[in-house]
Amino acid sequence: MILRIDSISKTYPANGSPVEALRDVSLDLAGGQFGALRGASGCGKSTLLLTAGGLLRPDRGHVVVADKDLYAMPPNARAAFRARHIGFVFQQFHLVPYLTVLDNVLTATLGLDAAARSTARQRAIELIEQFGLTTRIRHRPAQLSTGERQRTALARALLNHPTLVLADEPTGNLDQDNATIVLQHLRDYATEGAAVLLVTHDPNATQEAQLRLKMADGQIEPDDPPPV
Ligand SMILES: Nc1ncnc2c1ncn2[C@@H]1O[C@H](COP(=O)(O)OP(=O)(O)OP(=O)(O)O)[C@@H](O)[C@H]1O
Ligand SMILES: [Mg+2]
Figure: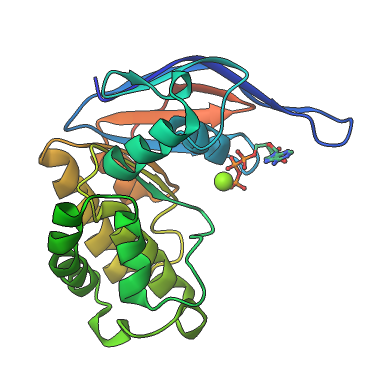
């Protein structure tokens, strides 16, 4: 199992009116599997992804990625593990504003050894090309459309060949053609052996997923396939 989420709960304190964003959530995702998670705004999807990605410690429970208990590791070790094994696409992208598209993608290699960094540049250029951004490679985020930023964030997430890809609505700002390219890429990436979990409301993504999940009020349950 690449991702094992075991009974996690998370409550945000939020100025005296606490929000129970995750209530005893468990899920398993194996290599080669593509998972799709949907649910109403505010139900806890991004919280679940952040927790699964080692970015937000749950109050209770465990997150195990490739046999490592993420929150049992010291922060430095967790950061190094994340850089190597987990590709994350944030809902708000979190690109570095003063870096070009190419350099944003290459930030994924910060902290990796020189050997890994030397091959990364060519792969970055290839991913940028696959996502249709070659003519924007020297642009900075403020000079990009929202969908171009989204694809830059995706290229960054895939750069280090992560074992686990977590992507928060990665086609949310894309037209049909670009959404199809991105979904195809993520699906192929899962077929090569990675575990891929998407937050998505795109019926095409849900259709193709091996694991379909629906979230409501901090809890998940299996989801039905979308109508054809
Ligand atoms: N840092 C925070 N502090 C306090 N409350 C938070 C924080 N982040 C999220 N919340 C609350 O937790 C709940 C779950 O938020 P989350 O971002 O996980 O929802 P979501 O399902 O991703 O929603 P959306 O579809 O709008 O992105 C929401 O009710 C939100 O108000
Ligand atoms: Mg969200």
